[in-house]
Length: 115
Image 1 (cartoon, rainbow, N blue to C red):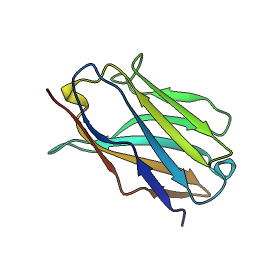
Image 2 (image 1 turned 60 degrees about the horizontal axis):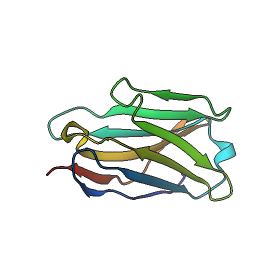
Image 3 (image 1 turned 135 degrees about the vertical axis):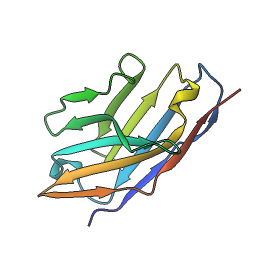
Image 4 (image 1 turned 90 degrees about the vertical axis):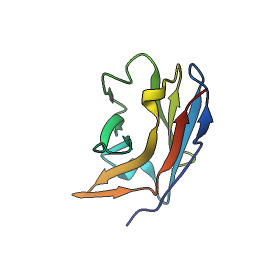
């Protein structure tokens, strides 16, 4: 199992920015995809963005134009830069990696967008 450690969540005002980080316990080159999901209270977990081993990125409609996913192979880390945050972005954000028919999750980091 891959260990994933997320950081970067917090409280931010509407219109603000945050950058989430997810550090993996092994090389990111071993993953088919790395992604970010979120789960708001009372709602199902949903995909926000993911990036493949060929660096092709996918974004949910709610994230397009505001969020950017990227990786740093030297640090085995995937990032989610979130700009123009809205109250609807409030959720626990989870890092996910998929490889060899497995799917591993981080512990989650809380993002709260509120004035």
